[in-house]
Image (spheres, rainbow, N blue to C red):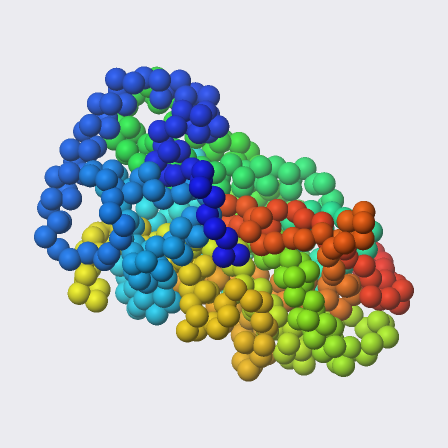
Length: 542
Ligand code: HEM
């Protein structure tokens, strides 16, 4: 994982000013970019503003960081690919708190969990907002998408709805659904072991879809394809450097005929609404038909529509957000697990020994939640997956509302404070031999389901901490534990019988990261294990 950074990695600035990069984003943006005069004028104005502001603040002591260019700061230095590895190099050189500036946008990279707990936790009144995004926030999401909302009444209302559905006291009620979906996952691995990446994504998506809309996703479901498309677009549109207007907000004052991106973002909003409205309204229709059994996020929101003052767009986005935020993260974590098992066979063996001791080695009993407390190594292994390969390694940026002082340094209002989870998980003082996958490091902690969320920082910090953490950690525990019980995961062999080598450096970049699909051999541990998997799945009559 400690990969050297490729030399030709595009930087944030390069993606802003490189026409080819913009061409990838949208042909219409390319047309816009060719309006050179306009760009130069806007850029000049922004530079003057940044200059005046930077002079204003220059007398205060700020955290160290690499030397930047005048006015534009580090815009050509921050890579858009595997940014967390760049943060890792910065921390090695400048320490745990590093300041960067992107054309006037201040960033503070946190590499120690204790600093994140102080700033984002204890001082959460100041550090719980998000940087306002014009393209993805104002136009694409009409300021209703929870992950992008500034801290305020709307966010509190949405988080309260999430809390009701996802607090530890309530998530126990989802165990039957999680057991069902993990059985389907095992069945898929039995039938088509070569497409394991797709099964991980389906497992994750169906769990959260059932939570949101009360119905399972079928194989190749058109809703799944549609939502994964929205998700892919959204991830791209929120990534730093994707849209010029988010770096130079003055561009938002230009009229529509000079801003084709605005119509594009609004069209995406309409497409999203078409799908999310339909799904939310289907739930409403079932409730109106007297289906009182329907237990899902959308149904709860409809029930409380008046009390919480929610309109259709609110309900659609809140339910859709659960799906968006929960799918990629859960799927990536399960995919990282498969890679860890290929690379660390000893950990796999120890987990299987524990499972056999508790359940018997005859393969007739599949583990369930009732066995969780008897399987401390499987709990430790799940925690180690979260630590070894965090699904959101670069961390999700928080945004400060007011000026602050910390350890004798000034943090300007409107700073993006980024808790770099990757760096925190590779803090050698807290996690010795941090690049190695070692579940033993968590073996001493209690093996309760809530403990899966503790001892690592994969779910973020403070008031924006992941509201899905209890559901997600239990979903992942049952998924991993059942796979370990039923299958041997080994490197795939090449034609000449040699193990095909795989490595964690071959992964995707973005807000989340997962290994690029890799060859892996996954075979049932015995005929009886395979029969038990089949029988359990048939028992659901699904
Ligand atoms: C392995 C699984 C998951 C991981 C690693 C994960 C991680 C994260 C992280 C790092 C954040 C940002 C926290 C911060 O800003 O400090 C976040 C936010 C969020 N997560 Fe998760 N998550 C997972 C699963 C889920 C699930 C299953 C759901 C919903 C059912 C969910 C819903 C959300 C929401 C709505 C937010 C935005 C919260 C806000 O902005 O206030 N997540 N998650």
